[in-house]
Image 1 (cartoon, rainbow, N blue to C red):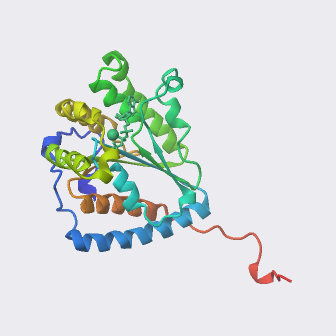
Image 2 (cartoon, rainbow, N blue to C red):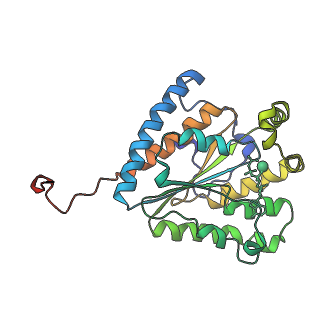
Image 3 (cartoon, protein in one colour):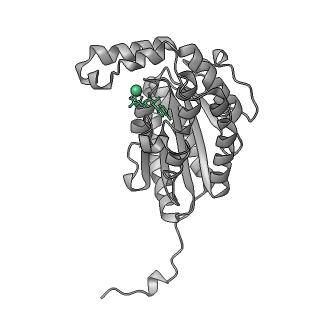
Length: 267
Ligand code: ATP
Ligand code: MG
């Protein structure tokens, strides 16, 4: 999955990244589904050990254009994982209280604790994406944030957090098809937001903003992955593999008891 990782300092041009790519894994949709179930099982076991060990903190950041598949990723990749050790935080338009503070204030309080996996559905990156593209803050304000974000994530990493960031890379045509499905299928109407069409018109501006995010904030301690997201099964496999391989690398162990279980008798 290395091919999708953005190396520190790498200049990203999204036009060179194919959202429909499936070259990294030798599977089709059907075999891919089977592989995902195997990954689900591995993730479940790894998460249980992580939780029992209570040492590492895992932060997963998901960013995408509307209909990019953030919700589907959470549903499919984390299927079967014990909800006790996993939380999902969705960052929406900031409240008045949140806007009264610095932009990292609302984010930091949701960072994972020991043994926890936290998934950010949108994140502090919105403050250099939607905010930039819609002129919600002047350039002199948002342009300084790349540096803050790199330092903030370094601090989290130094304090024991493993950070993985995924940009779900969708083509505009695929977004169109998914938004249309939200209009066509009554059980998807609730997902449709007419305001998404306004943001869709700003596609080139968003891609430019994402290119800056990916080029400036992918670090050794908090790498970005550009995930081809036109095919849902492929997106799930790529993200699932990166997470499973990362957790395997942490090599969490069940804690050793500080007593001799064989010497204990339960009357
Ligand atoms: P879906 O993909 O299912 O529509 P969503 O993540 O888009 O889910 P919504 O409730 O539709 O969820 O939208 C949340 C909105 O909040 C997004 O348009 C996002 O850009 C916006 N938002 C998030 N963070 C900020 C921020 N810091 N400043 C301004 N807007 C923000
Ligand atoms: Mg939305």
